[in-house]
Image 1 (cartoon, rainbow, N blue to C red):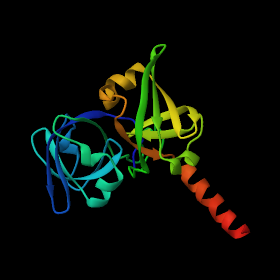
Image 2 (image 1 turned 90 degrees about the vertical axis):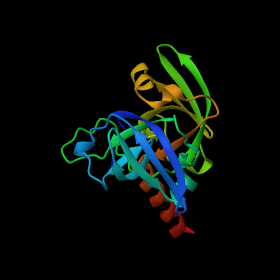
Image 3 (image 1 turned 90 degrees about the horizontal axis):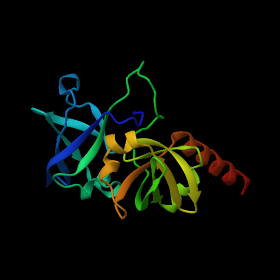
Length: 201
């Protein structure tokens, strides 16, 4: 489990298709001495298990299922990604609870200045539209963000300068795809409503 507060940026050093999935080597300044092989680390919103580690690099493997549901299949050497180690009991919860289980892929529709902030408009899958709310939380490429506006299947986010500078959003352009994870409370509420509707039918 994660908070959506990005602590490091990583750089994809190498990718290799194998065993029906994708192996990746990631360069970063993560303190790997404190991260065991088998530990979970969020990679742009995707919870992946460390398979090995070297001098400033670590390895992860994405299964076929992960490739089908996230943007990871399009990652290539040189791409920047957001990194966050898993939450420990007693850690500050500065964002919101994030599982690292991507609900869908969004597409950046527009990036525009908005005062000191930057306005990101993102088109989201229709099935996620019912799981977002104005002033509610959403994880975009693993970043805990607040939804400012909703227009049908499009959400609008105001990205402050610090977040833009310290995450991979600085490298994103209109047309790019991003990983989305809805707030877990919204998921459970939607499930309860669906069950109640089934019972009334």
